[in-house]
Every structure is written in C-alpha cells, then in structure tokens.
Length: 201
Length: 201
DNA sequence: ACCTGAACACCGTTCAAGT
DNA sequence: ACCTGAACACCGTTCAAGT
Image 1 (tube, rainbow over the protein chains, first blue to last red):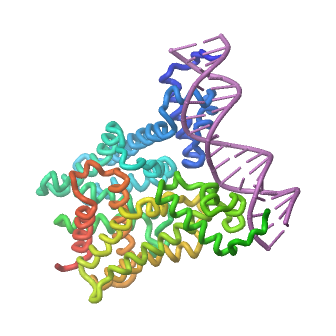
Image 2: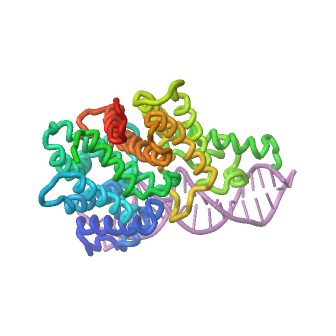
Image 3: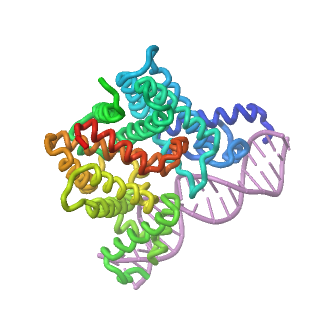
C-alpha cells in the first residue's frame, strides 16, 4: 500500500471538501467527522492531514465556499436599474432563501467560532467583505445623497439585523413572534430603517 | 461502593449545572464534556445519567439558567418613568454587556441547535418569551399610540436585529464595519427603527 | 435505590513503517 | 513522496453488578 497516486494532492483536497459539504447537508456539523470524510473519498484518516491542517481548517474552507455561493446568490438579484426598497427586499429575500434552503451550511458559517482572540485568516475576511458588496451597492443607489462612509456602515448594520432575524427565526428562538413570517419581519425592519435613513417613498 | 448518599438527587443536579457553567466559562462548548462535569463534582459519568437525560438535556438546562440571568439584567435596566429612545438604548447596552461579559454562556444559547423539526420544550420557550418582556414594555411606552400587537411584533424585530449586530460583531464577522463599536451600530439601528415607527424626537 | 466500573462504538491527531 | 494502520487520549451512553 501507499503511493497510490490515484489522485493529485489537489484532487484529494477538492474531493474532501465536497464530501464534507455532503455530510453537513445530511446532518449538520454533528454528522461531520474526519473519519467519515476520509472514508467517503476512499482514503484513510491520516491522508486528510496531508491536505488540511486539521478539522477546523477543513471547516473554514467549506465556509469559504459557502460564502462564495451566498455572494453569487445575492449578486444575482441585483437589478439593472438599481436602488429602492424593492431591490433591498430582493436581496433580503435571497438571503432568507439561502438560509432556509442551505440551512446546515449557512448555519456552519456561525457555528465555527474563533478560539480566544484569534483572528479569521485574511482570505476569509475578504470573502466576508464581498458578501456585503451587493447590499452596499443597492443601499448607495437608494440613498444617493448619503456619504459612502455612512452607507458602508449602514449596510453592515442593516445586514447584521437581517441576519439576526433570520437566525432567530430559523433556530426557533422567536416562536412567540405572533405568526409573522421571516419575510414580514425583515420587511418591517427594512421599511423602518430606510425611513430613518431619510429615504422618501 | 454505590449508595454513597453524600448528596440528594437534587443536589447532584445543581452541582452538575454549576460545574458545567464553570467549564463553559473557561473554554466554551468545546471544554464541556459529561466526563469532565462528573469528575468535577466527584462522581462517575454514569451518575449524570440519573439526573439528566443526556448531554443535550444538561445544556438546555444551563441555557435556561442563562436566559433567567439575562432577563434579570434587562429587567434591572428598566427606568422608573419608562419610554423613549434612552430606555431602549439602556436595554440594548445591557444586552451588549451581557454578551461581552458572559460570551461563552451567551453563545451557547445559540450553539445548541434543535435537531430536525423538533421543538424546544415549553418551559424553555416560556423563558425565551420572558426575555422580550422588558423590550416590549419599553417599546410600548415609547409608542403609546401603537397597537399592542404591532408593538409585540416590533419588539421581536428590533431585538432580533440588536442580537444580529451583537453576534456578528462578537464573532468577528463584521471586521470591515469601519471601526464602529457594537454600541454605535446598535444606536444607528434603534434611531432609524424608532423614526420608522413614527416616534417623534 | 444509588452509584460504580467496565464496555461499546465512536472521536481528532500523530507518526513509524511500508511502497 | 504518498498513504496506511495502529496508537494515543479522548468522547457519549448504557448497564450489569455491587452495596
């Protein structure tokens, strides 16, 4: 045994990430283990450590791909002629949909916790920043008179809020919300927020 | 051995919860294990299963106590003569402070995920609902003309948003927010939200 | 009735040893 | 250089057996 060379280092890397995503989709973080990933791709556990530093590293890379996917979904909802509450609600709807459709992978983005005061790696922070791009763009178009710094901050505040609603709803921490759907709650937020930002309409 | 009777069933229960909280405070969910809890209180692992259904049950009960503590902290910030943005910001500040001070236990409230479509037990949902009490009260006082149904919904939307900001900030998912503090972000939210709800001032 | 100790089926991670 | 298999130190959960 050893030296099979069935797959290149890079192929093993990709196979492992795909297998991990499948496991997560099937049963969440609980269902993920190094041993299971390895066996799904037909290798021994040890092999994984040729390609990943450890399981956290693997999870972080899966999360990176999830962020890319999320970014795509948001980008796809940007209209031709941009701006206005409708476009922001389109983006919000895309986020809600993503969270509801890909719940396990979406949830993993926040289950992975940075130990102590350790920072997330640079490439990951960049991907994170990209996700806010479409929101920032739509918000700037909605508030053309607003300074770009303020729009930047506002887009973070607004999106963190959308996320909070989504999260508590999906994780069933808001059962007593009086029968509102996630979408209705987010719409209430967006409406109020835009009025507060001085958006007429 | 066996039949030590050093502690009553209830004492073991309390000791275990306290030990679990200590472990969580020291190292988060990762540091928690049935075996560690047992050894901290001077019993064998098996003994824990006399008193808890399983580890998830133990975690849920720890979370219940965390919710009680959070409720206390919020309740303590309600003013005498209520209402207004200031009081809502007091509550928000209390929430932020709690999240920053008791990060591991606060985080555990959301790391525990309900499997499949299983619901959270009734006693837990009641505790959850109680947390929104102070917010609802302050918001109703701020918007006296607003129907109580709408206030109820608005308090959920607002607080889920505050939570989202807190969460993404503490978990370092908002590093590119342009140097705003959690408090500043929450203040932007509250300001806009209240204007949107038709609050003059 | 209470509690133990051992067992079972799992983990993540490392690394000598084989090709 | 690549990959294995075994080892180490852990898990959660169960349960016969002791007092």
